[in-house]
Image (cartoon, rainbow, N blue to C red; front, side, top):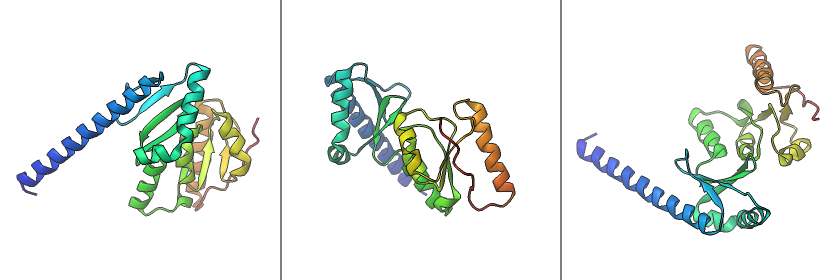
Length: 189
């Protein structure tokens, strides 16, 4: 690759990043104008909105119901720990897993997701099996009976112990040569 081509690519990347940052600032200001409390610290391509009042919860709920408008704007969203994350539509956990599966030639059945909240559901959908070391939202809990490929750790909610339980289960399956996890769903308390 010649220095000129590299320079042109670098300039295109810089322009893309600057344009993306300008749009992000614009979206941030729009959310601020709607009296939300967006948080952009520590995020490079998204921001988080905390809904501190019932009015804010109602307003943000109306915004996320208009999926077509968000799609037209190229914005994806997910609920995480009671806050809304907004990010470029092409980003997100589900798209990332899909990209990696395609890159490495993996089938969904060959992938496992460890997850616990609404923002993880697109990732879990891209994997053949999902394990939950904890359940942090009522909406995830309510979906368990409809998702036979999701399994709750017997020690769910015990932090690293539940994660360790799941990893040990997966290690046994991998070393035994199992092609897909075979664990039965655990009871949900």
